[in-house]
Image: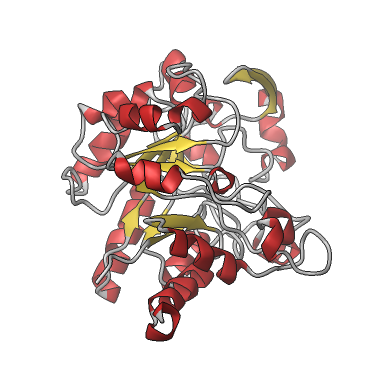
Length: 331
């Protein structure tokens, strides 16, 4: 029997709860996700916490805290000027006084009712949640951490890699079959991690641009058969933007076959239910926030041979996987 693809809860069940909160991760686990995904950034005192970006005005109520008003600043992150409040300028104790809010209220207005209910979680708290859920459910719940802007954080004296590996090792996760994948859009830090841990590594890829550390000229070059063979020197798989597999034109590329030929797993991102995020063929009538046929879209990618996928709606991923495994579907 073929191995079924893994369901990776993208920032938790972020279609239904504010992303990167224990509320979101817990719901994802309840919905049957195999992995929960924290994007990791450091605090000023070196603690890894889960935020999509180190700039937190869009995901917390920091702007409503007058005591932190003076910390608003502009920084250059991966070559782009960004203005706001940054995790590396706060201690963990200070960040814990903030509360999370929905990042995409224009598309997910229902999630705003959870604004103010959740703290910024630490990596320790996320690991504890996954391990407790594994004990309680009898299923193995893994984590799929992303190292955000690793070369930037190294440049300011807050490198991510050793801190992450230390926490994974403390959790008993330093082996090839640990329920962990470490992902990054950069290359050099994955090559460094290859010598620091035995957990599998995933090279993320975007449909445009290239790694911020300039270790490769472009993601397009990395996605060629030759580029994929280089990736296979240090990574167990790739996490490509889904349009690298199914462009808007509708004809699938050879990326899955080429990656598999190089011995790499393929975990595309990100499967979301809203029309604005769906492949054109799976959109419904209505506006950009209306839900289309996400389960069908995921099912199509499963049929193409992906080994896993990131989704903001884990229960739809679980449903699509179950449907693809049914005898009727295989006939």
